[in-house]
Image (cartoon, rainbow, N blue to C red; front, side, top):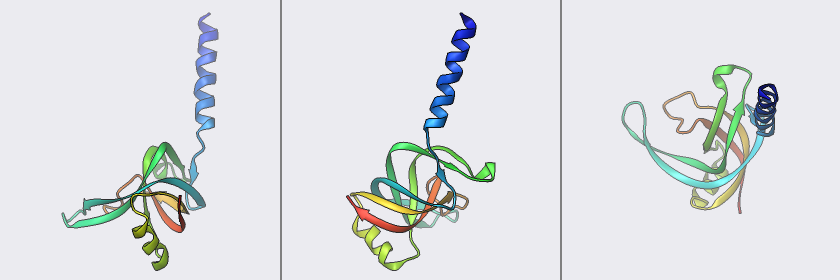
Length: 125
């Protein structure tokens, strides 16, 4: 009886981990959620703003290096180096959006969510 319960627990844990598809670091990936504008302080206590995508369910980030992996988060810091996309992000704050871009784990005081995404496409829903 104990052995059967242990096997069942292992199967449930394995299935849950396998079912949770992670975003891949530095590969184009989609994400959908509510776009917000967060207000933060940087390491020097200066104010800064950042676009934060609030996800309806937790996601994870798979990366080659273990320290760059994110187990679970419901927020992604999104930005774009493209002026037109940056303007679209400003216009779409407060709405549900679908973004696509390359993600990586936060690693500076200017990153305001565990996952950061350089957005290459954004669409309002």
